Image (cartoon, rainbow, N blue to C red):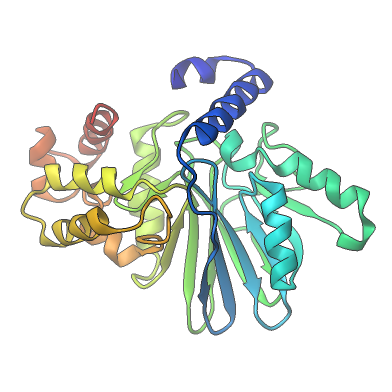
Length: 302
């Protein structure tokens, strides 16, 4: 189905995707919509569940109370959380064009245009006409501000050709919002890119971030990803420990596991461990790039 959607005109594929996610969300038992807040010295991150297993993230500068929202697929919920938090929300950080991430951009933008009291809304994302209402295209190492917080853009094409991750570093804390490039113990499918691009994204760029960087990903896929990782590396005690936690965690409520850290991913995420002999042995390949390709193919069938 995914390959078919990629061949369809963008508006048609977005409409079909929207219908799928909406129906899928209705068909499952009601999941928690409660917000999980991480308070840090200079910033606050609010993890907001959306749809079946998505996350939206509100990033707040503690000094100015200015805020940005990452992938606001449910605008009503976004505005409600912003009002409850008493923040000035004026930026959207879009990781990629897929409807379950960018599908709320147009509606949110219209609401700001209709209500001047909300102020101006700027929508950031990769330079891609498939991202609705994009006002500020960004590329590798471009920067923007959320109040006094400086955000650096990291270009990570593969899942989509214009995928962007957003990295924020303060003297005390570091966070990265990885959309569908890096998940807890996993990575996104290679819909519009190559194994080389995912290698560059995970190994060259994201692995270079400090190990204590908190990783906020786009979906709750922890249990399945860790089961796959445990299959690939059954002797990896870090993966097994996380898997046991995931089995007991409230993943339906999506209050556990996310955020991860870059250091944890290096120890447990097989897609960030393609240089390890144990991972290469599982797919029967001798180079990291071949291993990346075969590992994704194996995960697609897992």
